[in-house]
Length: 107
Image (cartoon, rainbow, N blue to C red; front, side, top):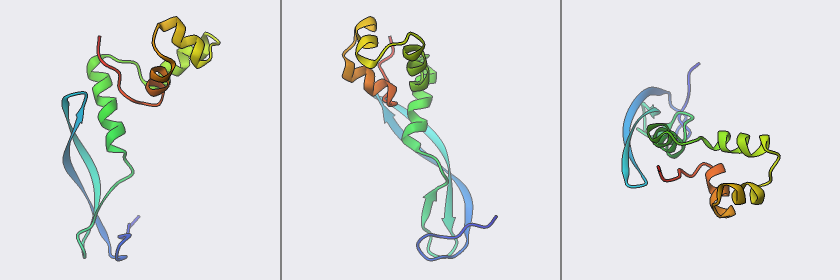
């Protein structure tokens, strides 16, 4: 299916670009799909959130739990955020950030 530029309605081609993101002091290199306009040159990311992808790579590299897994564990124990935060001995606001996708520090 052909895509068109949101800026000028011309056809776009699909390419990949390399971008660097800094996550917790580490540089994460991403190879991202983009749609580049053949007429005006506008580049738009092809349905990816680069920050989310960078955090996912960081978590995988350091063996950290995903936000979904943290939430699954908490819910399997039948705990709300406050109760689970007490059990794992971290502030509730920090737990909320972890479940929201902010990468925690490796231990």
